[in-house]
Length: 296
Image (cartoon, rainbow, N blue to C red; front, side, top):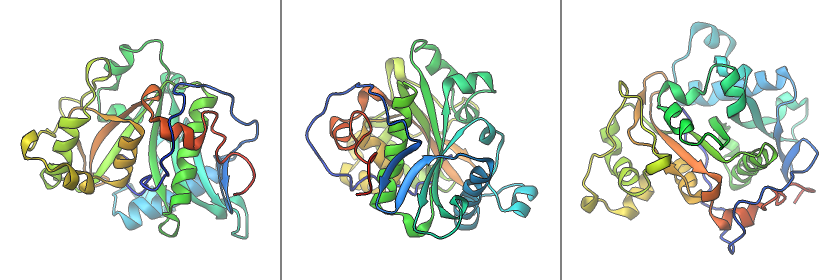
């Protein structure tokens, strides 16, 4: 699941850029910087622990997700995938203390080659990912998940840095497509009939990119006929992160899955790199250099 706390709606519109460029990213491990905020991968186990504490604050304390007694005792959101993922961080360097004290946002990244050596993707617990991967044997996929930002930092700058970090990471490892769960609040899909139906009729992944919820978990997204959907109202009803992925050029899989532990209704987001809107490539830079230099 991915809690919907990020919004890329404010990213500026610019002219078209070349799609599909795979230039080298900067050699420093800092992937982006805006003023006092920077994004990079976690360097130590203690930084991952601090990111898990941020996730606990957002997912459990704020969003009321259910976790096990040990996680509650430690006040950490932890699962078995944490050990094999890279953890993208946003840090506020103006906060006094160690890096662990500066973490204000996080994203979890998992490359296909790592997943295949280590038990698969998290999303496979809800969606039939294997069929999608099998149709693209020459493409390299990465999974995005566990996105969250502390309340005081849910701003345009933080969101831009998270997208910057994801893009720089994808370039560094030569990724061809991204995917991950996007979430609606609550466990009753019918409460999101307008938004789910809009996604189903308008941006559903098809043909070689088609992917479905696992049959035993599949909940229909086709809750309203296409002619009954008011597109403007549907867009307004979409969670910010899903709306942001849409603007990038993402598609959604067929069927939603109810995650009772996190109290969400999940859809699968699929984003081929070749689909990414030119205006975003131009804004962040085909080489991920937009926020890669000195503070701005």
